Amino acid sequence: MPELPEVETMKRGIAAVVGSRISHVERCRCRYRPIQIVPSLSALRRRAEGRTISGLARLGKRVVVELDSGDRLVLEPRMTGLVLVADPPNREHLRLRFALEGGAAPELLFWDRRGLGSVQIYTPEQFIARLSGSRLGPDALAITPAMLHERLARSRRAIKVALLDQSAVAGIGNLYASEILHLAGIHPACRCDLLRVDDWERIHAATIEILQDAIRHEGSTLSDGTYRNALNQAGGYQNHHRVYDREGQVCRQCRVAKIVRIVQAQRSTFFCPACQPKSRRKSLRRASR
DNA sequence: CCCCAGTCCTGCGGGC
DNA sequence: TGCCCGCAGGACTGGG
Image (cartoon, protein in one colour):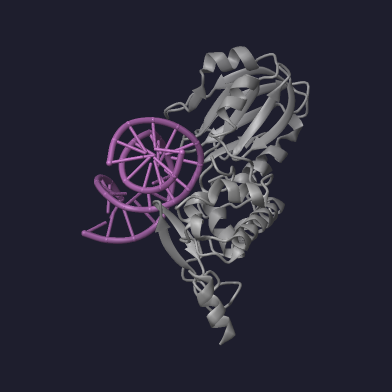
């Protein structure tokens, strides 16, 4: 579930690892299938051990650990992965341990309950080839209204489905796509190619506002409790959700309609039928009555 | 190229 | 009480 705000919170939470030297990389013994390491555990060890962490970045839903060699260590939590510098929720799902020296944090941990996450080590060239251009779009907090329009406006897909396309814009996942469209007042099933310029401007503004607000609250920890920050603490944004996981509850904006859940591309979408009408004309007619 | 369905994985909750 | 099934949705792949 970690999307841009959760991954940004994880990245900020591990700031203490910058300047530390990675003394040892250890794949934890556990009864589950080992998580994917690209290209391999031995390559990760060879290229990371002895190196100093020179910086941290985030790209979409990935944490990027920059090494003094120029190599980039990419931590990709996917559904249930966590990046920690404190004790993880349990030991049994701990996947990878980076022992550190010379800094404030003794270790950097990758924990993943479902094991869908992935860890990669890339040269600068490999990093660009894998994580830019046609593979991964601009980060959702760096994109401009014009870029968003350019990358999505010709698509015939529903806007909610298109916002999940990481090659168009990186960082938005299933939860925040619903939140963004509610703030923008746009029905999630609207076809991208039927949206107008001012619709894209509202989607862009809502994207920035929702993601920044969620970062301020350190992300969303849903009822399954999986997401935690780098210190194994829950986020707070779940208490501010406009629509996500609120099916049947009254819309916090209009205070009249009830939130509806639909399925798009095999994923849940939540929206308010009053605040997000299918066509603008209908809502204008309603407003003028 | 565009888009969708299927796949990976584990934990949990509902139905019987 | 236990077992089975469906669901959760990150990214990727194969195929229409």
